[in-house]
Amino acid sequence: MTMLFTGGTVVTMDPALGDLARGDVLIDGDRIAAVGPDLREHPLARGASIVDTTGRIVSPGFVDTHRHAWQAQFRRSIPDVTDLGAYVTNTLARIAPAYCPHDVYVGTRLAALSALDAGITTMLDFSHNSRSAAHSDAAIQALLDTGIRGVHASMAPHFGDWDGQWPKDVERLHAAHSSGLVSVRLATLATGEISGPLLAYGPQLALVSRYLGIGVSVDAVFGESSSTAIVDWARAGLLGPHVTLIHATGLTPEAWRAIGDTGTTISLAPTSDAQIGLETAIPAVDEALAVGVRPGLSIDVEVALASDMFTQMRALHTIQRMRAVNAAYGTDAVPNRITTRDMLDFATLQGAHTNGLGAVTGSLTPGKQADLLVVNASDINTMPLNDAVGTLVLGADPRNIETVLVAGVIRKSAGRLVGVDVSRLHEEVLASRDAVLAAVSS
Picture 1 (tube, rainbow, N blue to C red):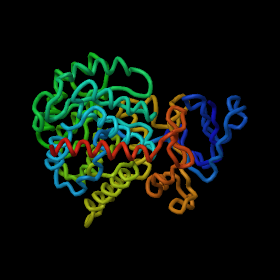
Picture 2: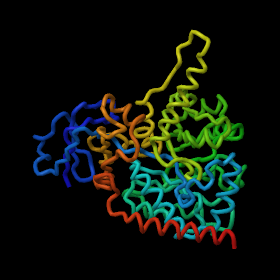
Picture 3: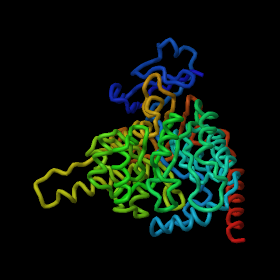
């Protein structure tokens, strides 16, 4: 299908293309064919479906670099969680062992549909409840059924009985999903402090990653123990752009030098770090930028946090600028503040790079996949349109997203998800949640 989005403000997030105050985006099949000020005479535009985006912003879809999607039935069940230990005890030790494959499917599907509704076209599902091959298959099927660009990062569970199929089963998953909308990564922890050495990244899991040619997402990266591990990994040649370190709070300067020197990627979880209080509780954006790493952003755990990328951008923007001004207060120094464009870059292009998909998505670059949003800039909370990037980061929210495309397929239209029976979904979510709670209490 060929579509021409015409007349809107186009934010490409491609430095070579820049922004267009009034521009067109031409979609041919699953790819972006052209971007320009007026493409109505383009050969591919003849016979294309015309989408009038006057008064709208056309932008790349957001990219979530780390979310534990299977938990979505228990959203905000512990909204005032006190620390990481309380989350681990309540969710990973208590609830997770009661999940059957169907529960994983329901939670992951709910998370992915919510992501699409909020303009997230790519989501890395850090699936750390892979108790059996069937659990993993259910998680991947949920991603496929929603049509999101999904990255299934597979990890064994922290606690409870499981089949012992991980990490060997990752080879099967990767073989089955080495092309198409869903891809596979290896998910691990930084150290064995929480669940023992089996889940900790090191030479053995790095060998799995190298053998399969897939990336690695490393969660729970914070503090002195993770810093020591990072330095050791760098010396052993286990770091690089294919490795993503998640959180990265409270790391030592030596660890950050190792990250920068190896081009290792970083996934920040701004609300998770600050609200749950992970190590220093300060998202490590300044530390990442200081060593030349531009991070991606992530949602993390919906049991205690917001589900959308707008919240992550605003939280990080506010926290970093507060820190910058506070550090310069009472001196002649000029605060080193990041900008709204930095935030949008982290949420799109850098997120794609972090997920290993920088050549595929993250910007409206001709040749890339057609993952994009149309945001109404004439709504009560977005009008008048004075600065498109500022509107996307500081003004808009999911209700303003009229259209979402993934690989050229419309997943949200006229402000509603396409082909989703929300009432039926609600029934399935409640039934799954109640079944898990019944199993926990029995």
